Structure formats: C-alpha cells, structure tokens
Length: 127
Image 1 (tube, rainbow, N blue to C red):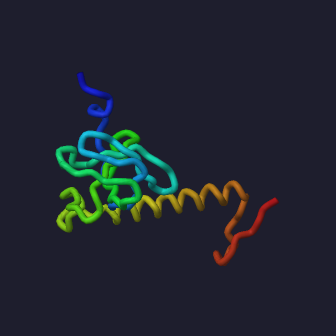
Image 2 (image 1 turned 120 degrees about the horizontal axis):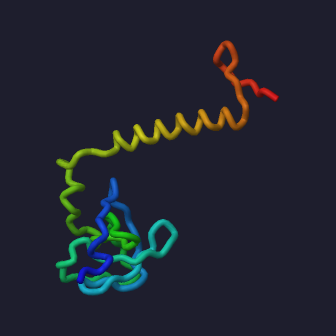
C-alpha cells in the first residue's frame, strides 16, 4: 500500500532556496528545516542518498512534496532541472507579475474610485 507521501506529486521551485536544519535528516528519516521564518518537515530529494544533515547545517531546498520540503545538502549537485540547459522560467514569472500588477492597479482604482485626468498624468478622486 502506498503512503500518502508517495502519491503526492513533487513540485520543484523555480530556483533553489536555502534553509537551516532544525532536526537531523537522514536517507531513512525525515527531519525539520527552518525556511522563510517557519519550520517545515523535510527529506532528501534523492532518497537513495546515504547522507545525513545535522541541526544548524545549511541545506538547499529544491521543492516540496505536499508540505514536506525536498532538500539537498549545501554544495551537493542540484537536480538536472536547475542546470543551465533547463528552460528559464523567469520570463513566465515576470509575465505573471506584470499581469498581477495590472489587475491590482485596476482593482485599486475601482476601490478608491480614482479617475485618470484628461492629461493622463495624475488620478483624481471622485467622491
């Protein structure tokens, strides 16, 4: 029978991040990592690696599976998806950011009832 962890898909991050080990991680046991100010369960991205990382060691976080972060020890090879030959996703991220900014600007103007002036240089508040 598969565990729920096995059935969850792996999501790789657009770029590797760093975290700090809070609880020892081995190839056979998950541990805990501090990442972006919170503590997360973590395991090796390469489960067959016969390594361990100890508290206070820095690790590279490459993705997640459910809420479990997938890590590689600092200085270890990254998954091939992060190689220089991998497609660059930053253009897609920039496009999403521009679309988000446009939507936010549009919604804020409605919320604040702003109207662009005839010369287009400023916004006027409509009561």
